[in-house]
Length: 98
Image 1 (cartoon, rainbow, N blue to C red):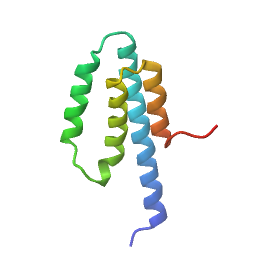
Image 2 (cartoon, rainbow, N blue to C red):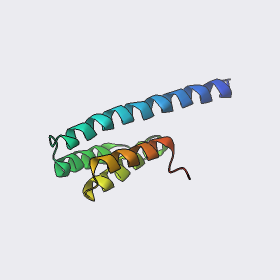
Image 3 (cartoon, helix red, strand yellow):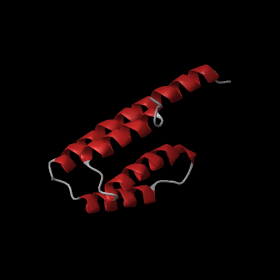
Image 4 (tube, one colour):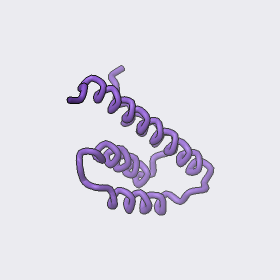
């Protein structure tokens, strides 16, 4: 029998690692957008293809949601600063009142 507390801790650590990885990757992408190195439309197409290849299950739901929300901002022409702020809000679990 598995220790549920240990499994939950490992799962939580994995989730934090994934969140950190997404944040680091997206920060790099935002820097490239800010420098005019990346074309927004082509980037959106790439992520649409990537999301389309992900299994549609509970394990990938969070990643798909983060990327979909980020892509929407990309398509809406949000400035890099707004895209970054929205990304970190999603990663942190949503907007916090304040």
